Length: 364
Image 1 (cartoon, rainbow, N blue to C red):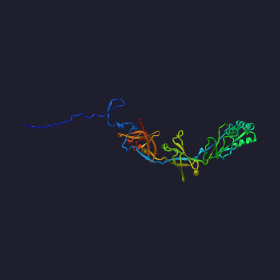
Image 2 (cartoon, rainbow, N blue to C red):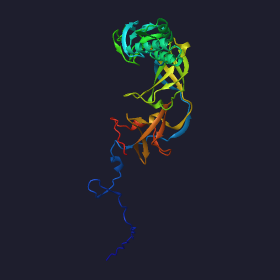
Image 3 (cartoon, rainbow, N blue to C red):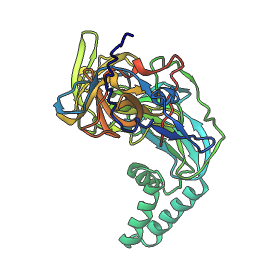
Image 4 (spheres, helix red, strand yellow):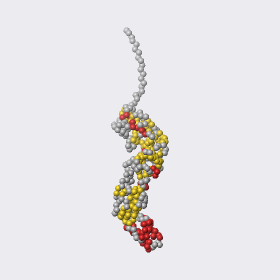
């Protein structure tokens, strides 16, 4: 009989509970489901993006920008002198016929018949004839006629002749180009018949015509939205048109954009020695707002979505879009006014994280 020896090797196993799977609650049924580790990849693609794109943080610094805008040369209508009727009456005669014709200072424009003016002249003559020594009444009657549009010379002629003048002549108080209300002076200035006609009735205080000084020019500048907080009245500017240029200052900045427009309009007067600029010519305007101290990002980090701007902030392993308020854009940098902390890390180039349709959903 043969015997065999069998050796048993003892095996020891550590007894400990197996790791518990990470679970999350179902958004639909409410039950706890095992997390596969891919949940972050299953988020809506317009809310988070998985990427290993380089990041950057806000950088506080100071820039001295030179802002470039575009504009055009126009006539300065602030120098326009209105031709106003100081009496109510009827136009008996017009001495001018066309808009855009040149008039001189003191030139007769229109002759008006006014019953109220005749009455005021008769009162002056009555005081002069019956109470000549009453200086206060006499001066008051004279002043009334002057306020109604008569000159001192015309009043003296009435006293000398002893007869009222049934018509008063209106004179131009300035030299320049004749315009009608609502008609702007332009580079063509082709004369056209006046709409104001003989026989027309006018009211007291009504503007009949105006005279524009065509030697007074200015630059109308369109200010980009991102530059609007940095260009103010008094800001130094350099205006360039080919080989022509001059330095001036912004002195008329509109407080808000016009209806339906995003641009602000600013005006820069053209010095008399530079009035060789042609009306209607396009110009480039360089403005110097001084030092700008702010928080900056690379311009390509911010994505404009029309009504607002976003950046992609890195949270753990994903990039989440966030709305920001921006300011000046200059030299490859953009100012961030609101929406980011200095500790936030954002994608260097936000365009890389947009899908083909550029849809971005922002969580409030």
